[in-house]
Length: 94
Image (cartoon, rainbow, N blue to C red):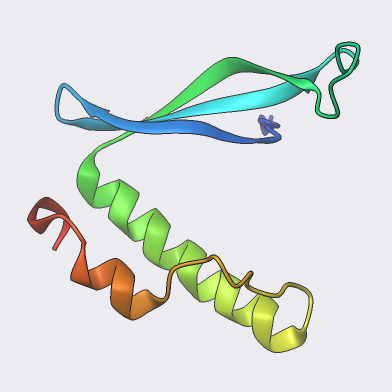
């Protein structure tokens, strides 16, 4: 039986114990009075060795390029360019 994991997004990415940890969240309940956004609840953590994280990151970059090419998504002006990402990239992930 396949198991599916649902998350609304990634709350945090960290490196601990030599492993990359992605804290996954889902939106919970209703927005608090006067708030526009729902509260986020971190309920799962994806833990990957750095090499596996980099393979996943590269795979996601290729997929985002396909989505942009098809017109399904558009990069915001605030998103860093690939060149600037590599210029500031950690030497641990080269």
